[in-house]
Length: 209
Image (cartoon, rainbow, N blue to C red; front, side, top):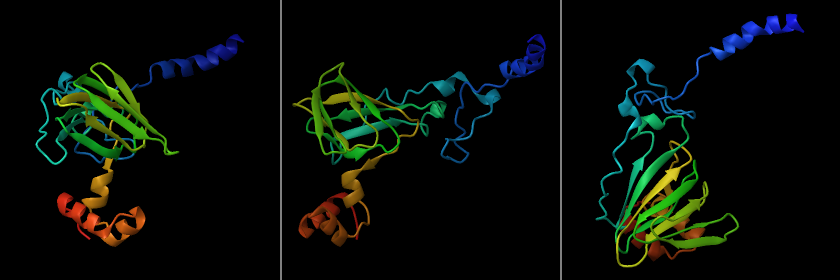
């Protein structure tokens, strides 16, 4: 038994002294692959790489949806690279809405910090889960499912979203249909919408085709 321990001791020591990557601050000049960006050289990493102040200011809600989403994804906050999380700030003016959208790469934890937010998602069996949330309440939005957020009442709302990926992805249903070059004839066939309604929505959102 002793001789076996003596044989494996060097291996155990080599494992204990092996290099461990505690973090991988993104080198945004490198390619963004399936595993994220390449790591910034450790000698060039500073405390600033782990701090991001971009969510401190309100977003501009003067737009068609009366809302703004300010991301803190890896592209904005390189210190998130490889850590499996990111965040965003949602500013929703009275009457504002974050339209139906999905994050293909992450689940979302929504945290309301001001006002009231009606949030919901559509499950794969077409069940709909909707809840109006007040300050301090949290809501889970599972990965890949269509979901939305709407300001409830006459005051603005602020919420923060935490994602289970440093790059959760985003696809907004209305923009995919009506702000793209998806042929109108195919939209009519696949959605059962009236051609004139499709034309109107494309003119509003800037789509072609």
